[in-house]
Length: 339
Image (cartoon, rainbow, N blue to C red; front, side):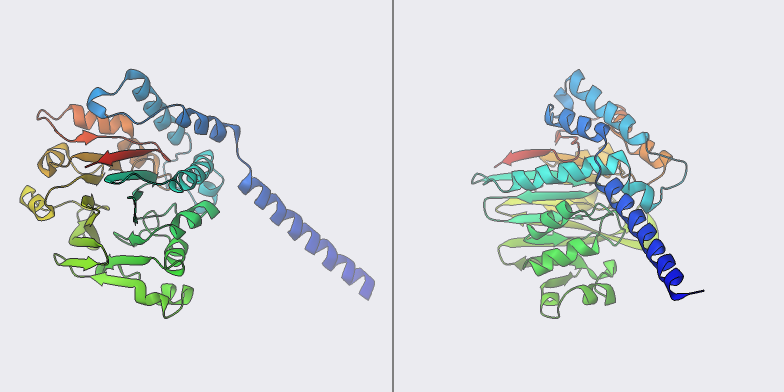
């Protein structure tokens, strides 16, 4: 085989690989019309408190359940399938909107809270941005921008739908702090390879049921099991910023109702949908955002059990009154809380 023929074959192989890569990149960044339509639909509706929710708002939330279920299968989808789904593309579009809204000032004595994805929320006062479980499994440029805005990032555990290593890296590179309990295990070779040794000094490992004062925020955390499993840990955080007490549950539940007293007066409870209405009542939180719905990395049965329809049925079947204001949010939506 002569040299010219060999070079020609190498060139053809390179062109095929380049074309394949270009096709994948174009397919990844292409925004389907369904994703664009849902972005417009979300921008045309507004969050409503559940006890006084309009039928129109309920219908939109239920339609969103169907939209997410359209991507579902009996087994959990691959990362590749998630990345090219209409649902992931929609969340990508909405992250950009969140970032734009975050650039605006928050009024004094107010707390604005955005729902990013799964258990990921961003809470902003007029002086501080606090983030919890900021992950969309597959990082996007917009997720990285959001991470750069975090003064503090709290991590409940290491599952990919709660923790993204690149988001953690960007928080640290931007001078923010990352906080967790030692059971989460994130401080290892992976994180050490992503940031400098000096940046690792902004990672704080918290002891369970011990109060901390870091800069201008008060922190208290409790170790729980992960969805009842004794093999995996999870952390509940109580974070007080500008006199707003935010409690984030991750994927855990408390052992009994007496434990709610550990968290004091709760302004905002970011609660996994596994937490039962009776526990929501015992929390006595002023506001509740139900989370861990529509996580598209799970299978069909999980998505059906963690949907707006399923959650509303759970609330309606509870005989006692939950005095908290419950705000089911779509991705990208936010509520504002005043003192």
